[in-house]
Image 1 (cartoon, rainbow, N blue to C red):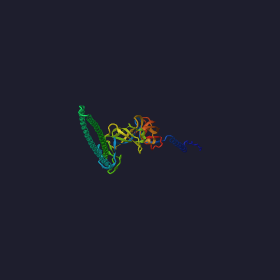
Image 2 (image 1 turned 60 degrees about the horizontal axis):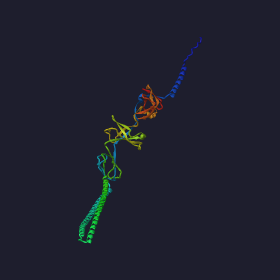
Image 3 (image 1 turned 120 degrees about the horizontal axis):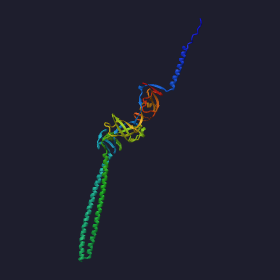
Image 4 (image 1 turned 45 degrees about the vertical axis):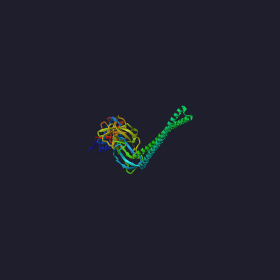
Amino acid sequence: MVDRALPKKRWTTKRLLTIGGILGILLLIFGSYYYTSGKSRLYVDYDRLTVSTVHKGTFQENIPVNGMVVPLYSIYLDATEGGRMEEKYVEDGAIMKKGQPILRLSNTNLSLNMVTQETNVYNNLTQMRIASNAALENTVGKLNADADVESALREAERVYLLDKKLYEEKAIGLQDYRSAENLYNYQRRKKKLSEQILVQDSVANEQQLQQAKQTLQGAKDALKIIQEQVGELVVRAPIDGQLTSMTAEIGENINVGERLGQLDVLTGFKVRVDVDQHYISRVFTGQTATWTNGDSTYRLKIVKVYTQVNANGTFQVDMHFLGAVPSGIRRGQTLQILLALSDEKQAVMVPKGGFFQNTGGNWIFKMSDDGKIAFKTDITLGNQNTDYYEVISGLKPGDNVITSSYESYGTIQELVIKK
């Protein structure tokens, strides 16, 4: 028998296993390289994402703030006189009319001062009457004396004229004539002196009377002041309004200047708003805000800024409604207000979402055109309002981006979207 050489097999089991092992190792190496050297990916369900579209439109920077409805203005009731609280005519919250009494204080010192001053006025009035009567009696006496002088002058004049005629007729001597002449001249001077005394007496009496009147008026003015002070022990409403913040109780001692309460005017309202101190350099009078109530939106304007920062890190502003005040609002009601910090302008905007907390607004996952992949894209954001961020760079209108939270994505570079 002749031995025949059998043909050698090219693909032996051993060889196939060797080649398979080598290919597996190469595949493993290639896969490891692919996944470690390329971008890290994560498969996510589309339904778990919030996809938003970047668009261009009217943008205005605003911030949400809380405001409280307060009266348009209030008048504080401070004690102008100290005393003990004796009586309360109304309770806190009462609707008051101008002049209506609110409470009554008592002050013993003021009451004693008023009695003393009343006595002083009475004494001054009595003294003035006594002085007036004395002046009148004095004047009457001087008038009587003047009447006697007038009578003596006339008699002296009669005798003088008669003796002068007789002397001219040589019926009497020169001595008799001279005696009558001297008496006449004496009575004339005496009459002139009496008239001067009457004039001086009249002036003196008038001066004395005016001084007495001034003294009496001064005493009356002092009494009036004290009476007003006593009258102010009854605290009355200076205007129509609602009494609030009255905490004084019967029997309590009230000091001068102590706050007793306040009177709120009910003819209008304003809104006092707390604003974070971060915005203190950007808030000014004249800036506007909006408040939405149901289907209606109302505009407000800042009329006063209180620059003092409170302990909670906020400062306050007062706002007035522009136009009609909304019906139904009440004192103490809290309003959610949007305060505008800039004018309206055209800008590229991206809706706000949870992504900002993880990226700080420095990047975002942008969807590919086919919507199958979202890749990390660097962006720059500007101002913001309650709904949007202003896009400075990195996105354009029409781009679709993922705005939901990235908290579970870690350092993933791309998201593979599973629909």
